Image (cartoon, rainbow, N blue to C red; front, top):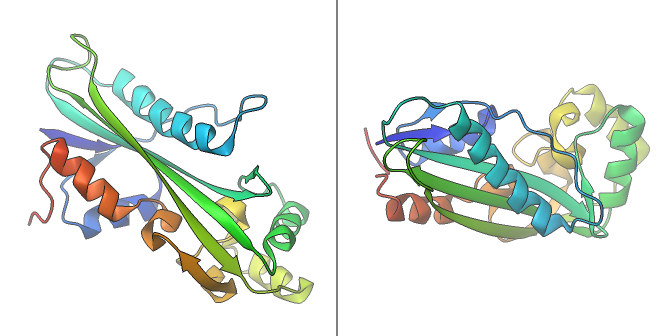
Length: 201
């Protein structure tokens, strides 16, 4: 059965490959605007599911396939920190995270279409993983230098824990790989339940 990753994220591709899964990639173009009054946990779950549905809608024929979609959001003061629009936006985000603990929420949705897209509702499962991340106290010179590295521009919360942004992190409580983009322990179990083998060569 074909496995499709509904994401253009190179980090998610690398994580899925790390556990020996064979898969194809299809980006999912969806509106990622939070709904009015939507809680962060509900938002990330909805985003993961909508990515799966968008990817499934582009599939053709009756071939069986499984789709994995995920969303990762940085949460501070119950607010969702998306990708920064410019330097000032990134600076504001990083100052909000400076010297304190914030949450990173990653939701994963896996759906199996056993007889193709046109026949039946898929068998699906969703998990939400929350990780606490403790940041050092940052100054504006650090933030400016980090921005100039080019790394924060396409990162939720304006930092990447797998890159230069790792130097800002004092500690984490929870799943490191979930902060990067996929909680691998949970994903592996979900894939096994869906009949998708891991550790393949």
